[in-house]
Image 1: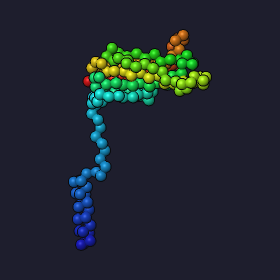
Image 2: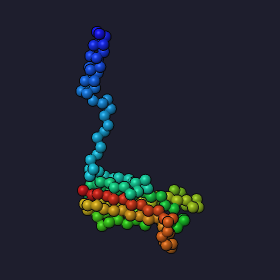
Image 3: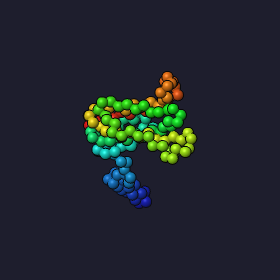
Image 4: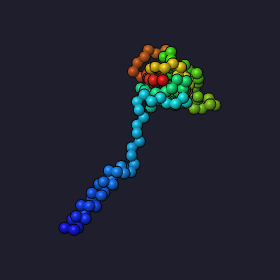
Length: 145
């Protein structure tokens, strides 16, 4: 009976200790929805397609999309009036230009100028072809506060 009572006491002490101290590695608290990313640079690529991000007014979002102009395919990127493209450049994988068919990265720096819901839309097309199922699309919503 003494061993049984001692076991019950140890069990209760362990349960109460666990209740008081909490978990050893608590999960980090999630960022509340609608929290703005501080003014600064946010870099996105194809993996953030259809994402929604929250940013402060005056921040810069850098969009980097793979492009290969040697095939005729180019990104046509547009934004809503609350965003302003401040840099638009193509960076080839082969700066020497000696590798036929070499692609690269198209980079846009976009400034968040007005608060509210803003949109970035891009389509990867050949200018002389009608849009078909072969095109790629990129879309992102930016909620500016």
